[in-house]
Amino acid sequence: MTRPTLDRDTLVQELVQRLQPLDYVRAFWEGGAVAFGRVDEWSDVDAYLLVDNSGVSDAFVAVEEALRSLSSIKQKYEVRQSPWPGVSQAFYKLENASEYLVLDLAILTLESPEKFLGPEIHGNNRFYFNKANAAKPTPFDRQEFLEKLQERTKLLKARFDMFHNFVQKEINRENSLEALDYYRSIVLGSLVEALRIRHKPVHYDFKMRYIHYELPAQVIEKLKHLSFVRNMSDLRDKNHEAIRWFYQAIADIGDKEMQSLMSELR
Image (tube, rainbow, N blue to C red; front, side):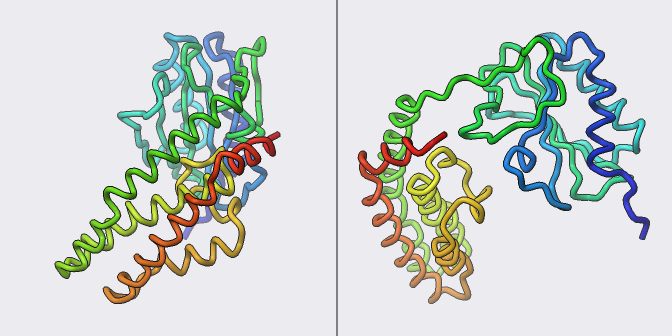
């Protein structure tokens, strides 16, 4: 098997050299693992381009030309419906690179309301160029975020109250696959969000992403125990345990506790 020859630094530097001279490209930076100081041999490249409002299509062409100067493009996956307005996103795999060295490219315009730059949430992004300081983080409003989090916590509990019994319903029917799916999506999903609110509120909606780095070790071990299910009997027991833990986690998130957590932010 041929070893990949294209490394991360070469890929990034080629993009910088190709994109920086373009007038309609205002800024280029990297987030993800780089922003949190966690780059390893499996890290992808979370790249962000800020362009003029009419420059998105041209920017994709320029990026793909840069990539082809290094390697043929093995696969492009275009995100058709981005959850963020004004954000166009595509993923690239290259023939000459490790299968893990994926370029995750988000192209933003000057009018995009979300720039993914706030260090409180997105870490310390690494800028490769930022012409005339075009890319600026929006100041983090702690009070606004706290109110949003308090409302989210109420909604999370209401959703859990309404739907967590779907797991037991399917267990009663001996529908193991349905029961397992509801357990993972409703019970464990809600539990993880509650625990993130309790321990890392700015990443409350990150689901399992970065969870090993951001939650206490004993919490991670307990989540591992609940996440791997052997059979229906085991599912029944772990479902009850997870439900109890969810309500305890929610009870631990009082207004004073949440304000204290928010005050610890940089």
